[in-house]
Image (cartoon, rainbow, N blue to C red; front, side, top):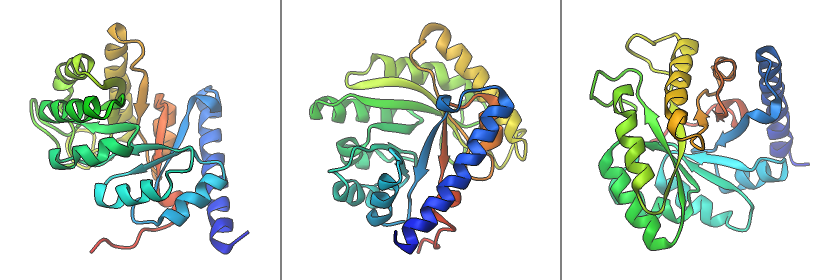
Amino acid sequence: MTDRKTELAENLARVEERISAACAAAGRKRADVTLIVVTKTYPASDVRLLHELGVRDVAENRDQDAAPKAAACADLDLSWHFVGQLQTNKVRSVTSYADVVQSVDRLKLVTALSAAADKAGRELGCLVQVALDAESGARGERGGVSPDGVEELAAAVDAAPGLRLDGLMTVAPLAGPYAGRQRAAFDRLMDLSTVLRANRPAANMVSAGMSADLEEAVAAGATHVRIGTAVLGVRPRLR
């Protein structure tokens, strides 16, 4: 085993222990929470090592990094999640490799994703990204739609050819009433998910929690956690 593979294996084991402990504390089954490893800034070789170690869900937040990485790993049985703010001029590329876009935050993006997915003959999973720091009708700095805009976007995804509404995503806000209150933020997301699932029971995915706050997300009920640094290490600065 290479030094890097050993490092990744040890990091994955620690993250697995944290998720398992959080599930046990919340009275949840470990199988109810999916680990997504966010591989941004790290090479395709790391993705291949992660696959060897059993990882099947990986995420990226920039198309210019994700597209070549996904192509280099096209022979592997991986599910690719796009989690960054997505510009419409990148939609065609993202649709070619992503299985799920977790950052759907505006109607224009729904229209573009639908057209690209339909043309490619693909069904693309979509999560509505919720900005808990957004004022009514506004988008947060990290993207996302305000809570009162969730229903409109969800309905648009539902009606769009080539798209499948899978659920909701959020990033713990740095400003606003939920700043520094990750558990409260994730509880709010779960409340929104409950409303969404009342009419759309299949849209049951709740993506929340990262390396620093995965325990709070699991305690709230998240079905997917997005972990980067705790698995891959501290990222080099982007230039």
